[in-house]
Length: 199
Image 1 (cartoon, rainbow, N blue to C red):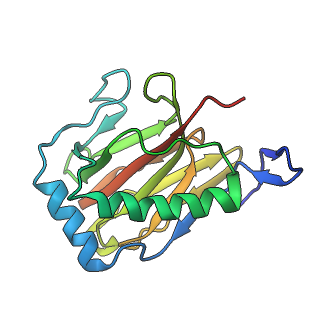
Image 2: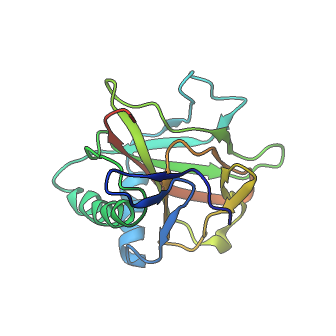
């Protein structure tokens, strides 16, 4: 892995904006299955890009898991790992979760499997920018072929771990994609952490 986009913050500490962070078993297998159950019971729609494109750049289905009291345990657990990663690596000024978790489904097909081509996650809500993207793997890697989460930084390509229950976090301004799912079905939970515009 190549390290780049170094910056010194006000305290003179070096920050690596090309680094990513992952954690295994943030949720137990039983909790992951519960998240999938919640996602599967939520109304789904065709996945689109910010431009509304649902055919060329992105194919798949999404649902949104609301920030309710019943689902608070999911958001609380995600917040702990976001804080840990940000405190250790990027030290961004964050506000928190301004958007619901996105439950994504990518399926294989005989013709062309679901995918999401290279993109950035920078857009946000009401002038507040997404700063950290987090992807939680909900499906065991033995259940599908393809579907790698690939993150780019200059000339480096990072393939995120695919183990069930593993979460990968990275700056939202890094190009990334979900490669075509050739066979089977891949579910994940995506959340963005927002903050005021970068200065």
